[in-house]
Image 1 (cartoon, rainbow, N blue to C red):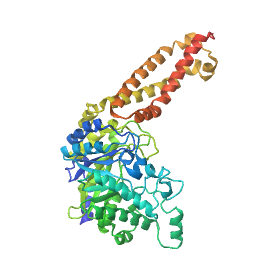
Image 2 (cartoon, rainbow, N blue to C red):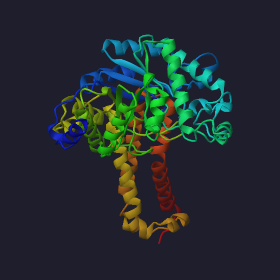
Image 3 (cartoon, rainbow, N blue to C red):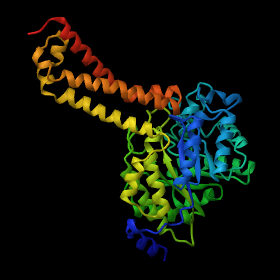
Image 4 (cartoon, helix red, strand yellow):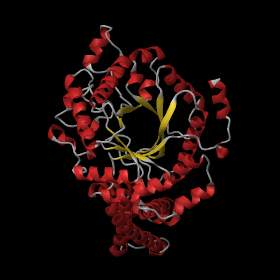
Length: 474
């Protein structure tokens, strides 16, 4: 019966879906890159609520004000305890569910990069994965969880990460145990997650741990059932693709149901899932992802596994060491479309157009970044395709300051105009960024997205001026 229900629902026209019971709609804030100032969070939380969200997932990473031995984990701009309390108070005013996320296994770069904790790596030269064999590893995780739960007093859920635990089993201690047949990679993963979740439930029986599901997908049903992991945690199933495999998703959910899980979560993406260095958010891609999740929710058998909610992830970095993805204001129009689609169970192109064109907190950044990207394209096109530049002001000419005075007139005006537009746009963007972000974010975004093109343009203008002034004219 369940299979027939799934198959029939999968064929439903996504433009006429009735709004399914999606549960909580959580906006995920990835604070390991470009963390906004508290003043900006005060502006966008009410917007999240207006658009249909009723909670947030706060992935603090190094923005949490860790204390004691963990103080080394803090970013220079880490939020203060009073900042965190202010966020919680704001969320309460909006009746938001607040779920902190702390990585406890994989993606531990922000911890294991430090010399103080580098001996706890699974593989000595890789800072991503925690060694599950060392007692000190669990003490570290417990201490991180304790500090987060101490300041988040009214929790219902805490997210313990545990996704993409790369190189698990490749440490020396793991290999020795594998050789003697005492364990395997799946057992290592299940045992560690179960230990972390058990600690939380014992310390706070009213708090339920959530974790990313990807490491479970290839574990056998028998082993998963025997682990009894379902009694300790709730999986958050994530897929950010615009057209993910619906049949495989159906089988995965049924697997989790058969192995004892009574509640699940979904995770979509409203930004940060289409490339590590992308600056503009493709709304249509993320809309398609949410339409897929609507179909999955609609197809869930109502008398079986229960959906607690969906997290709309907004990744800011792919990991601690990667460049910035789209800034949060760049993803707000996409978030608006995705939240409204989940809320209404349908989508209107007019809604997409209006959301993308409207004013919202950070819309000045949205407009300036869009302008900068367009200016980049105009610079590249001019320098690469202009026949007069290619024919009479090549690198050979520039190096020798040798130029035909008539030919330079064909591009000088356009070059100077673009250069002036660049200077104005950069000033306006920097001013807007400084209102929302800390100086290191402004510096990083400029170095990655502005300086390469700006430097190229400035050098071209300098070479042009020097050639004109040199007297080496035909």
